[in-house]
Structures are given as structure tokens and as C-alpha cells.
Image 1 (tube, rainbow, N blue to C red):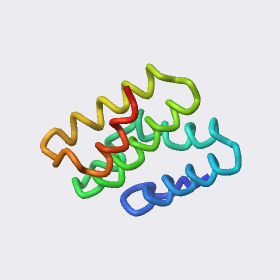
Image 2 (cartoon, rainbow, N blue to C red):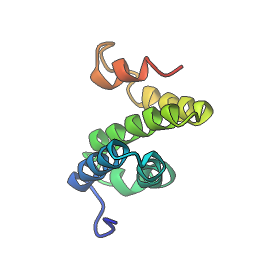
Image 3 (cartoon, rainbow, N blue to C red):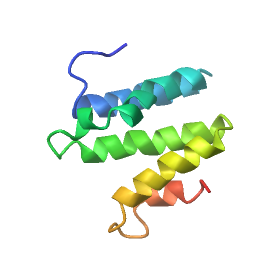
Length: 102
């Protein structure tokens, strides 16, 4: 696993590794990889400009929870992302993706 300095651009790498794990049928592994940032949001947010990749990881996590049947977890994470994007345009790509999650 990727453990060293997991901030900023490495968040994007974590998101892509999670997508790859899902692609090979390891949805639980993909969720586990992204859950760390749900529990520890300070890690990527400590400098402010880690917000975009963190929100992308959270959006993926919500989608993956939904795919795995965890609708309550999906809704919780989606609500958190929506709260952070409250001032975003309605056609913001992450909001469009989250619209598919109740």
C-alpha cells in the first residue's frame, strides 16, 4: 500500500488505485483504500489546496459504498461532499455524479 506522505497529488493516485481495484473486482479493497480519508480528513486538508483531490476521493467512496449496497454510508459521504460544494455550480462534475446517490 501507498503509505508515505499521503498528501496532495498522492490522493489522486489513491483514487486511481481504488478505481483499478474496483475494476479487477476488488470493491472491498477499493473502499478500504479510500475509507482512510473519510476517517482522517485532516491528512489531505492540512494545506487547503488538497481539498479538490480529497473531495474526489470522497465522491468515489460514496459511489463505491452505493455499489457495495451500503446505501447509508453512501448517503452520509455524499452529504458531506455536497456540504463542501454548497457554493459550486449545479453542473459541477462531482455534484452531477452525487445526484445519482440518494
